[in-house]
Image 1 (cartoon, rainbow, N blue to C red):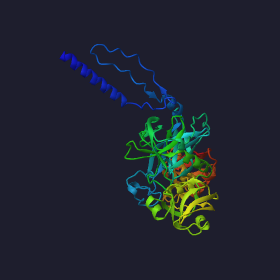
Image 2 (image 1 turned 120 degrees about the vertical axis):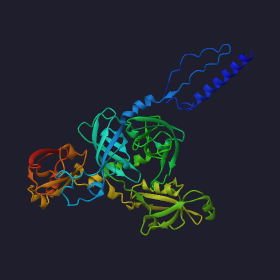
Image 3 (image 1 turned 120 degrees about the horizontal axis):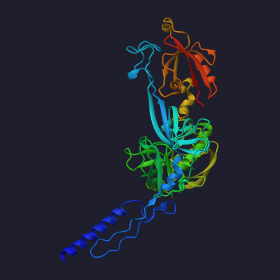
Image 4 (image 1 turned 90 degrees about the vertical axis):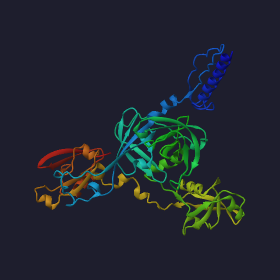
Length: 497
């Protein structure tokens, strides 16, 4: 009798433990099952007889397999080669005998290769023409960009535009085979609610097309990364290599571009909202950079104690602390301590909200500010100006566009030094650097080679070769006549498109 009682108690305890463990696995029952599929139930549980522990039916765990299959092909791996700025010699030292002369202990003319960084991130294709969204920090300073698709195709890519202040970049895939590309759509990040399910896909640690599931943990996060912080926060696993990859809603729409993690990946990740991205993409595609609207005021948050002290009927807004001379705000008559509470009827709840709202508008836009001045509610109309380039963003615009063609190809050039000519070197352009993995290296060029002729034109020095490469048609091949260690040869150099 005692044994039967104990066995029944143990059976109940074991059953309870199984139920709790089951509840701890998988998404809760509130998951929108209409938007994702559910696995079929197993066979009916056996009937409880005698003292046997009751057998519980397995939960119908939902799956995101169909959603994943519909979007994963549009997520790409972005591989980047970047030049390390600084001296060309090993250990950060300058060449002891001047440009173009070998280092002691090296084979003749085997100059130290220019130090490079290789990195990888993620991206997502948003247009059949080959437009790819990624992070600015993934491609900033890139010399060569290669984009790998899930189906095995690889394309070279060019940077169309970048915005360092929001960490967004747009790439364009290159080549005649850029067709039949999988694409996804940008969704409405404002429509997302905290607690909604999200899916992150990317290439963490080089593990391509990795999928993780989580929820939207918070919206409008300001993590002090820049003046326009408005991040989505998620607990979906985001790790190094996920940068630039998409964050999907359960409809398969991109509602964010993953950009940052906290603590090396501890369930706290951040993504640039898709609505912000949609506002930037047209400018980045057309102009390569973002031109922002400007009021010309310094502001701080309105708080409850300040509202009481200033006798204001509201507790949210942006208090004007300074007005730039000659700015749109100055011309509209804004004063210190004016408290801005709305712009074109849209509530302004903080200083950062005002900054972001104005920044998304184009210069020349006419707006109406609603503000309080000494307790009185007023409206002021003004025309936005162009935000000054305080951070030097325009000077960082598309680093490749600022380089000479030979630099984008991966070549360092100089004239043949008199010391070398005295040793029998021909006149021409001396290759002092060939970046590993570059177009130049793939063409078989090496440091120490002298280019004497390019595209059937004589090359008397570095300037001649730079000019010929600058004038070459993108996508064409330039025939180089070179001399190296007393032997002459030909090389075909492909000009990037």
